[in-house]
Amino acid sequence: MPRKLLTNLHLATMRERSPYGLLDGHAIGIEGNRIALVVPEGDIPTDWADVEREDLGGRLVTPALVDCHTHLVHGGNRAREFEMRLEGASYEEIARAGGGIVSTMAATRDASEDDLVEAALPRLDAIMAEGVATVEIKSGYGLSVEHEVKMLRAARRLGSMRPVRVVTSWLAAHALPPEYKGRHDAYIDDVVLPGMDAAKAEGLADAVDGFCEGIAFSPDQIGRVFDHAHALGLRVKLHAEQLSNLGGAKLAAEHGALSADHLEYLDDDGVAAMAANGTVAVLLPGAFYTLGETTAPPVQTFRDRGVAIAVATDCNPGSSPLASPLLAMNMACTLFRLTPEEALAGVTRSAARALGLAEQIGTVEPGKAAELAVWNVAEPAELAYRIGFNPLHKRIMGA
Image (cartoon, rainbow, N blue to C red; front, side, top):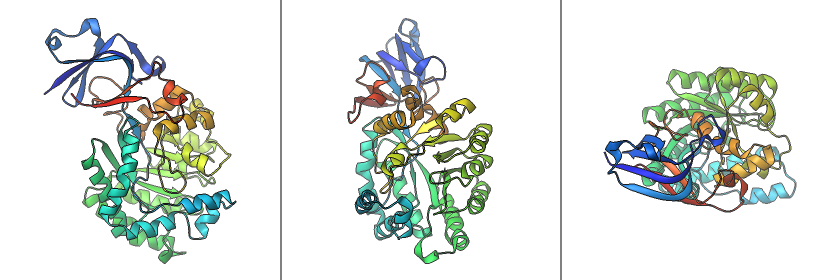
């Protein structure tokens, strides 16, 4: 396999030890698609002496970033709803009036698979341009078996068209389409469960997600979805406690969920359940900002309980039209009071855990994937500090 040595670098391994896992005077040895060595430059093994070297000019190296919660694939946009919110309409009022997710449903159903891929590529490129090598993409706007599966086929195609790992989530339990008004259980029986079977059979779903909220699905209904996912051998995660506290995060944790996401209205029982079950808290400051929310997630309680905190863009057409993981990091610090180190861990180590990929990505150490970001910064805190500035020098994907 091809080999390469990276030298003259400032390394933030993001391993859980000293701040940022910082190492200076070290070299990274890459063999094929894996990290083979992280050693002091003076201790490079003799069998690596003649390997090609790349001098990184003292730049900062981190794990490539992970955007662990996105809705990149969708039709249309909701710029008019942005105007409506500024005129005083709430997220729930827009949704109950037929806007929100249901308006994106119509545009997504009208779009072909090719249309969805073409529309999503610029969003994917924007995220990758800020150092992302792994992105999660959900369904959730088709709201029928045909169109939900179409969305995940488009997501898989994106992963074949760009040097990026795409992880998919089946999110048919995202909203209720108009044809099922008032018939949530029938929708689960007719669309969510059989569609999950179809997505699993076609290899399109890596996990199953849902939206547990008054405008979406109840804990009992989400429990049915999770039970079916487990029967298929699929991991679960959940949009929970974004607008109210229905106990969704506790339910998700008790089902062994990889993550619970949003969490603005989460209570102590929910945090305790997440801590007990190793469920990651995924914070989505873009939605908090766009919707003008004022109740922040219980970050200090997460710290006190040892709950891992991830950060993601939640890139979507309505509540978070954000395609910048670096801005999401800044927002997590300014709006939720994360430290810059917590924000960087949130888009590397903890984000990998939120996708069930902690053994493969998220830190720089031997055995992990050779997916690195090289930055034109002196210190890692700069990544969360600047606003509207991208200091990425390059991504490195293998030797």
